[in-house]
Length: 114
Image 1 (cartoon, rainbow, N blue to C red):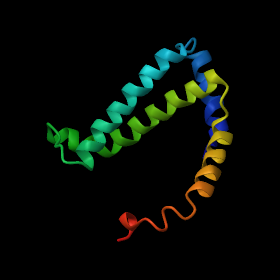
Image 2 (image 1 turned 120 degrees about the vertical axis):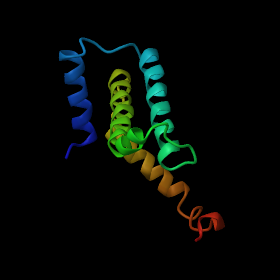
Image 3 (image 1 turned 30 degrees about the vertical axis):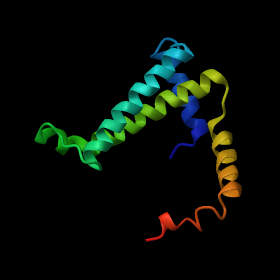
Image 4 (image 1 turned 135 degrees about the vertical axis):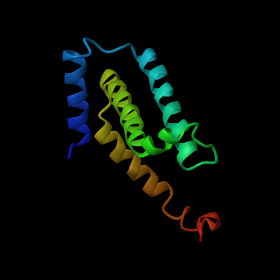
């Protein structure tokens, strides 16, 4: 298993050896949106009401889902590296913020009751 810090380092090493260099931040943001769109398209077909165009697409969906999520994560890791964001620390702070802010909010939300 890999930590987020290890993932950031591994992506940075890949970029510097195989990828030659990072695309600029704006280009990577556009690529991130493209990858999120591809993930959204697949989610709409697996869990939503849209159907696959071919049977083969439906059969490959579980593998594709993981691959699309990894694509999103890869580009996000690139952006974090480029902008000096430590995602491990940022995620921990975000979870703490949500825990404090939403401690009672979700527990008392009638829309979440089954």
